[in-house]
Figure 1 (cartoon, rainbow, N blue to C red):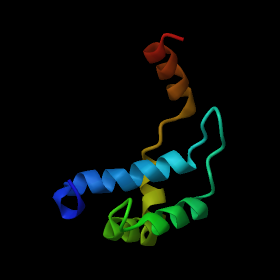
Figure 2: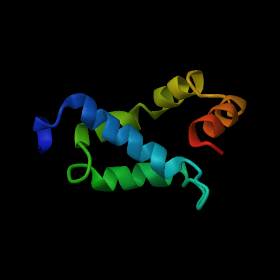
Figure 3: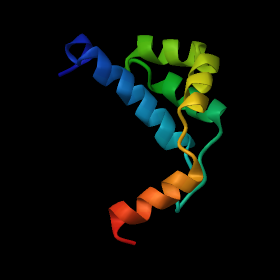
Figure 4: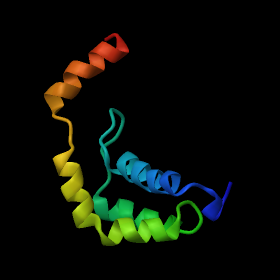
Length: 88
């Protein structure tokens, strides 16, 4: 599949997932600044990600941040869930 043959929800998820992967801290590295992640996404628009989705994501980033702030999972809940699912 390529271009518009890829379902819209998958194209949206690809942009959101890539942004999250780039900006989230990992055990082996710190997340990159939002501005750098957006620049990488804009550079890859049209080849790696749907350019319309990247444009909508970047131009509405304030709204994206507001939604994620409302739906974030508290760290204490994550700490309680992760050991239960990983057996640690």
